[in-house]
Length: 77
Image 1 (cartoon, one colour):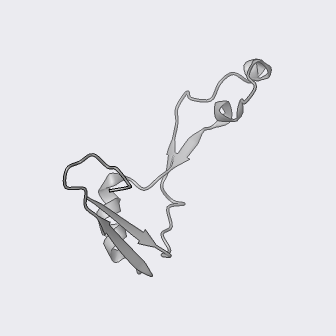
Image 2 (cartoon, one colour):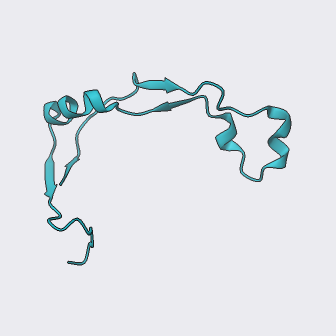
């Protein structure tokens, strides 16, 4: 079962989580074709503990409920 909210305002800017030791040594950056991920020092996401209250306290323009009774998740059924 999935709940999807559309056109609401959810601020997660204060939910930054540092990634200790994730950033690579800059001297090896030229060895990677795409090296942007090596400079990531934090990720921003809504933690599970806050997600339920945040979802139901947000004023959404529309909310969709998807129920997959046999858990095969085929979108064309």
